[in-house]
Figure 1: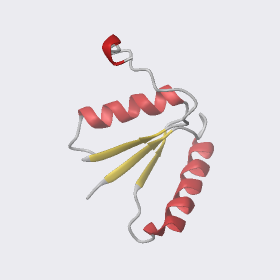
Figure 2: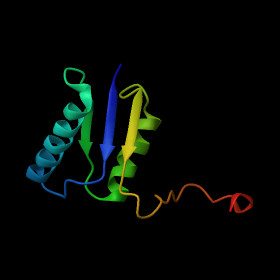
Figure 3: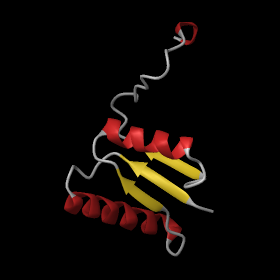
Figure 4: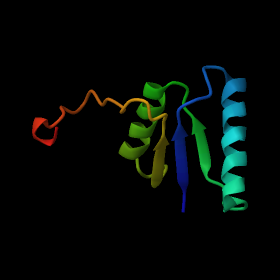
Length: 88
């Protein structure tokens, strides 16, 4: 099984991405996933992480189980869809 987690965070530099992945790696290991590591993709800002996640979903062969992890202060807005007014 190939799981990739696209996370918001890590800033814009390579060093910040490395530090972000390291922090999430430690968190995942402490959660009991030692030896079964998931691939962590530091996506920088919210929209950048979401764009990377959408690309992974669209090209499913590279990552059959992509996941998205972003801060919860606001929902992610997808410009490609129009909200269903009946659901609001």
